[in-house]
Length: 23
Image (tube, rainbow, N blue to C red):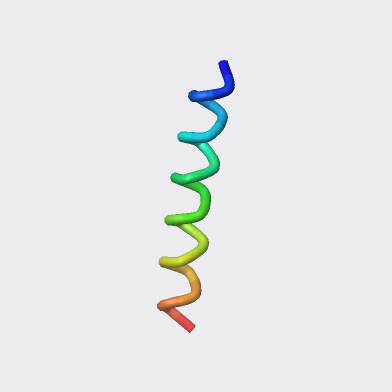
């Protein structure tokens, strides 16, 4: 379970980074 949560956090961080690039 913990590994899945970490993966979700990584994907979320990627989306946040992409959003920052847009700005």
